Image (cartoon, rainbow, N blue to C red; front, side, top):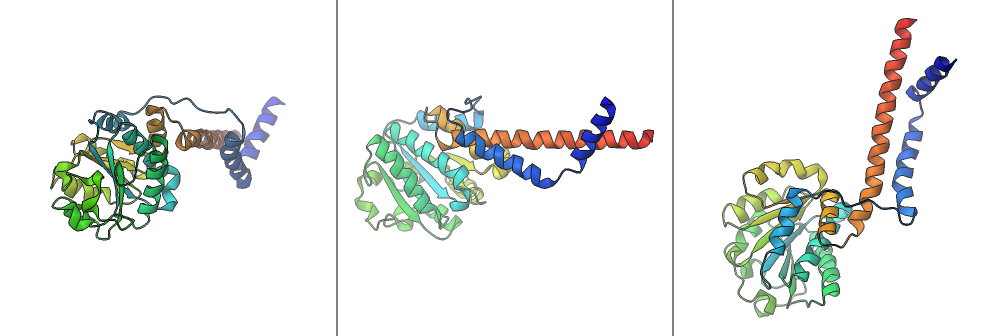
Length: 283
């Protein structure tokens, strides 16, 4: 009797309507958000994320960190939390932050991150940070910063003359920029590696979407990258490092529950398949 019930259960699992699986995914994503107080612990921080954190954390006050906001709205859930976290970390250390973009949709998202961090730490546009905006040209722009940043960005995003901004005093090339990090959902970090690091020796880190992260592991091994922030997980790690868990940390719980649901359905499906095959052989 018990064997018959088990066999029927596995048969139902094998032919379950896929819409129930989609419902399970929806619940896995929604329920963790609506239950108050439900959260995940930070867990272990990867050495790749910590390397970027340590690099920024050890810079002397008024050092220059350049952040290239090279992503668009489609990548906001993964990229914006890491942008905000890095801006907050740099401004909490009293570093000068330069925002640039070689992606046309990046400047406005970068502006949001810069303003959020500046409001928290009382920093002033043009004095403590600047958003230089978008410049078309990709690799040409990256190379141009290596010779004269003022020729590439004569004005900031608001149209102010960069040469008159206190935040840019003493900065002309990569030699005057202490750390460069590109946050990207596109292949543009390869150009930053080839030109900013290889041609001009800039100290470079990257933050990318999770599906892109493995493409950059070789550059970590060769030392061409200081560190790498890997998607939402890396953003959550950075938030915990700066003791400001926010949207990335909240997003990790539904993502993890959804992954567990997918793993469970795959396991049950395989068990049902092999159970049915064994039953057919016995028959």
